[in-house]
Image (cartoon, rainbow, N blue to C red; front, top):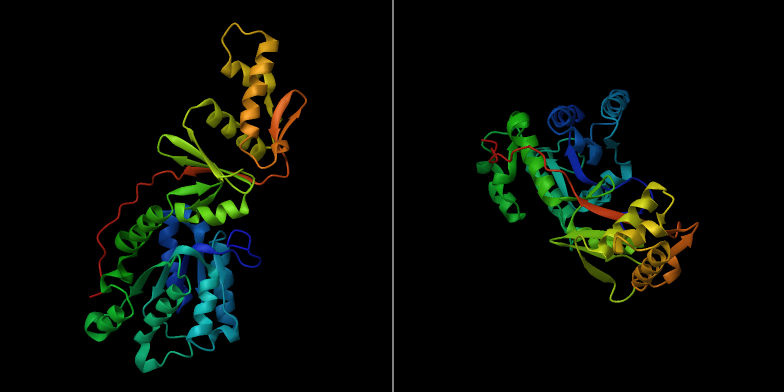
Length: 331
């Protein structure tokens, strides 16, 4: 089972890990102002010491940002680097973005005098995604960090320039994260942002998926016959019919009227019988693309997809105006 259908908490493409929730709330406030569409893609980790104040702060955060998942690790998750990193990885989508404070002072296994060892948590999380590691960005309000642990960051495989100043949430941090997110997830499936590397998992979970390509549409999914995908020219009759069938299924429509399908393909002066015959030949071609031809049903003089099919239409996400400023590192 992949991330699309895992039981439990939904994996999200943006995970924020801060030692104090009020820092995360400041960040979410800016996201809400600059890119509110991203709130539904974010999980935040609550790492403050357990207690009534922390519980109240977490509840307030969840109330103020209802689209955000507010997650807290259980005691076993805080035993050591490995257990905590596994917990973080369970919150994060493959190929997503991990945003972590350089200093996670509330974690019991990080020595106070070696606070910069928090950076190795991100390296461990990244290693748990060998095929699609997440992008990692750090936040810090430290001064002179490069002289303190810049070499450790390089040793852990990170660029010190990826440490962003918490004092620049509005003009640097949020615009940079938004631009990175848009670059990593340029497509959407329904309301879910996705990327082309997500395709294998999506096609393992869906029966029919239409993918936009340059000047073409590709049909894929579990129900598609060998070789498992078909490339159709954008605007071609077959591409238009597949798109209409998928949209009809997703909207719970009544199907595509046989005569309407025929009228789209036939000469203007075709009679009803000719329209029906042309539509039937066209649908025969579409059925030949499927493992089971009965997945395109004819009912009440209309064509429709089998209601049991799980179908999806991949589309480009709309372009946002958020700029991508040069990263300002903590000095």
